[in-house]
Amino acid sequence: MSAVTPSVGRRRWAVLAALAASTLVLGFQLTDVVSVVVFAALTLPAGLLGDRFGRRRMLLTGLGVLLAGSLLGALAGDERAVVVARVAMGVGGALLVPLSLSVLPTLFGPSERLRAVGIVSAASALGMPLGPVLGGRLSDHFWWGSVLLVNVPLLALGIAACLFLLPDPEDAAPVGVDALSTALTAAGLGSLVYAVIQAPVRGWGDPLVLGLLGGSLVVLTALVRRERRAARPTLDLALLGDRGFLLNAGTATLVTFVLAGLLFLLPPYLQAVLGHDAFGTGLRLLPVMGGLLIAARAAQPLVDRLGSQSVVSAGLVVLAFAAFLGSRTAADSDYGYTALWLSLAGIGFGFSMVPTMDGALAVLPADRSGGGSGLLMALRQVGGAIGIALLGSLLAGVYRAGLDVTGLPSAAADTAGESVVAAHLIATETGAPALAASADAAHVQGMAVVLLVCGVAALAAALLAAALLPGVAAADAAATGGGKVGKVRHVRQIAGRSEG
Image (cartoon, rainbow, N blue to C red; front, side, top):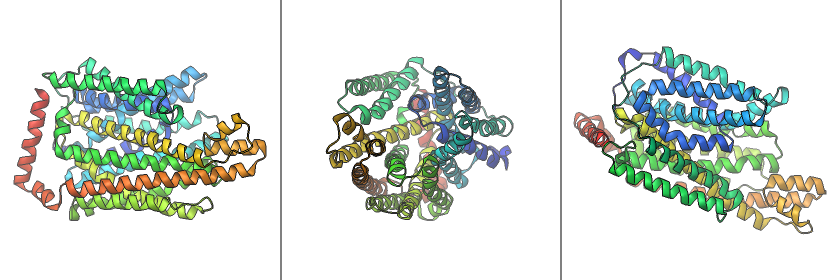
């Protein structure tokens, strides 16, 4: 890794605060299908562009595109302008996230980097529940586009920090960017994510879903074959052969899978079953973020004392315990019980995610940190999308099986079977309180099954982390001179293979 730039000094915390504020914006806005697909498709290519043209330059470009998209969306007068704005925001987000991570090793040494990763990760996650809170409050008093204007001061702060505080090292790599490989990457990832998003709605056997899944497999296979033959590959596939990067990235992806499943369940439960509006729902998701913030702050000293292996494994066990607690939720449970297991889920998420993200970043060669960060974020994005798709399909199946639609016309029964929210609307229109009660019970039953699956997945990940991640002895060895030499030599070997 590149050394921390000495001239940064205390400015690094101001830069981190600005980057965290900018990352917070993404949680507010990346909620529709267009933005999410564009973001997922371009995250990896965006990181590669940072390695080629300079991470600071491309980070500023991402912030500028995100700002332009926010302004366009806020002032949009028709649907076409809204779509363009959402695409722009997806492009800007794809540049912002991996490049924000890739500059952290330049700003922070090993003793502080884990805390910095925790702050950026917490800001990214915090935007998810805050989005509905701010959106609901602003839309109650202003026009809907006012939600996007919240982005403007935060993004302006990020641009100013990058311009005046972020150092401008010679970080552009001498390798070119293969346009065809970049296009294959975007097409393959975009098709895959869009397919898994549509699968719970259309069904896994739908021709569009199958076509997109098959197309993504063909495209990504062609990409891997092309990169293996290339003398100067665009993608550093050797990173996937690095044990440290692969294990940490894989664990982070599994954690994202579990957390995506947890957060997917909660809004319809809080809105339909407990009867809260969008603003109230967002507020009641905040215990997750509270737990995450606690873990992000406490992770550094625990990792220093116990090692990443122990902290990550313990975090995953806590996450599993939270999921098992959540599976005991009943239709008449009060919110206090939900807040309890949500807080534990946030703590488990923080202790398992932050050290694995830091461990993956730690092994990246300096001249490939943008592409490596992009690969890490792409894996997490795909893991989250697959988690929502698979667990969403499981929830839908259990919900439909438990829903009692006796006496309803077929059209109304089909609508009620779509979700608990739709069933409540039908119940209100038809004056059938029994339907609402049945929908609540069926949705909670589906939640229980999904949370049990999440708990088992988290326990499996905990066992893998305990068995495969480096222990305290390995971490201590890496901190000694001999360990550093071996690590630097390994990183140089990866960089040398990258440059072919």
